[in-house]
Structure formats: C-alpha cells, structure tokens
Image 1: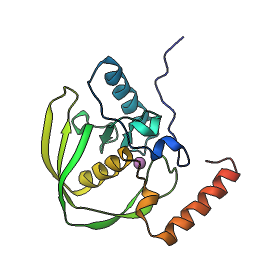
Image 2: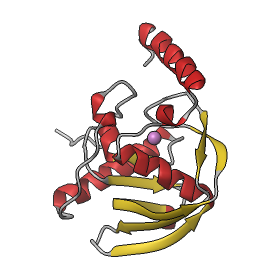
Image 3: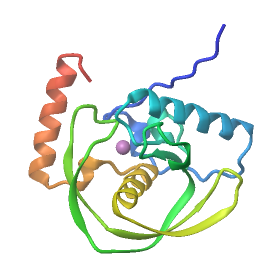
Image 4: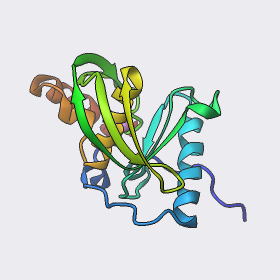
Length: 174
Ligand code: NI
C-alpha cells in the first residue's frame, strides 16, 4: 500500500489547535519526514502559504512557509522552535488560515521582526525580516502557541466568525 502523502488539516474547533506546541528536541528522520509531508500538504491546498505542525495534528514547534506556493524552491522556509526576539511597527491586513477555510479577517501584526529559529540542519539562525513574510511568520508562531486568527480580532468580529462557522458546521461544510 502506498504511503499517505497528503495530511488532513485540522480546522478551528479541534483542541490540538489550542495547545502550546512542544519543542522539537532533535531533527531526526521522523521530523524530516513530517516536514516533507507538511510541505506537500501545504502545496496541495493551492492557497496556503504556511502550515504549522499543530494543523496536521502534531503538537510540535514546527512550521513551513512558502510564499511562492511551490513555484520557487528557494522561497521555502522551515521554522523549528522559532522565537521572535524583537518586533516593531504595526499594520492591519487580511489574513486567511487553512484551519479557517474560506474565511479572511483583518489582523494587526508587527511590520518588522527579529527572528530566531533553527533550520532543518539544526543550525540556529537569527534574521531580521519585514513585510509579508514577517506577517506570515507571526501567524505561524501564533499557531505554535495555540493562538489563532479568531483570537486576534475584535470581539464583535469574533462573534460574527463564530456564527458563520457554526452555520458551516451545521451544513456539514466545516
Ligand atoms: Ni493558519
């Protein structure tokens, strides 16, 4: 039997999305395989530019990002135990999330971040990042802390989102 190449993506409502993910202790074969599967799964969605391990049911500090959506290998970013050391600036922009299919909401994020992370070879990297990639990294690190876009919006918008999700769940579309 062929091994499964695309993982199921957990949607809002699943408890794994609310957990603080555990640190990756060492980058072994299992983690390397998970990264491959996450990249494949992200690319298969056609719209996703980031996917965090908790979204595929693995509560680990691991996330993949590809702003090129599979068009440029050099754009692939793997975050392992990432941490934002400094941040500044702020702007509002619409964000979607593979765990909130079909929904986009305006989220405020820092415009500049100073990131510490590990790459797939276990090497520590410190880097200043700005713009859209900085936004996506903040979104992904939120996932690793159990924080979702619905937690980042006004209470009024949160109520509207919850209502809409309930309606979709009722129709079996969530
Ligand atoms: Ni997301």
